[in-house]
Image (cartoon, rainbow, N blue to C red; front, top):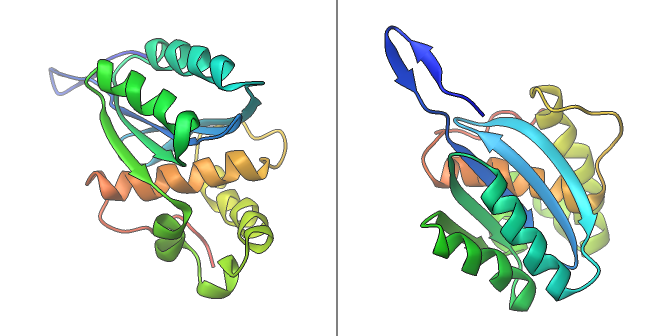
Length: 166
């Protein structure tokens, strides 16, 4: 990730990593203000595998300034702890918090409905991005995309959540 010259000033890009924490983890990387760079899902195999992956990924993203983590317990702590060691801003959330701002109540009335709608709605963000999109994201990656988009507003990078087409 490189610096960008603008009017004889060097602009250093900032990045936000969104994590749908679990042994099967959804990930989405955004650049400021709200551009999706990539998204993916990984089965980490175990909490120990997740800790190693969190360390490696956090250390591999230059100019990572924020991590938004949905989840709790040891799977979320792995991300939060490593981000804290690197002085990266941490947003800890749960599905109920971000879903209320991005989905209609009928779209998250149960887990299955919420996950299906996350896949559908993440498509709008993918279409407006530079992220490679060879296929539809898994529900883990789709939720990470929505968490990241919501977090871009939460940290003040954007004022409105207007990339989701309805």
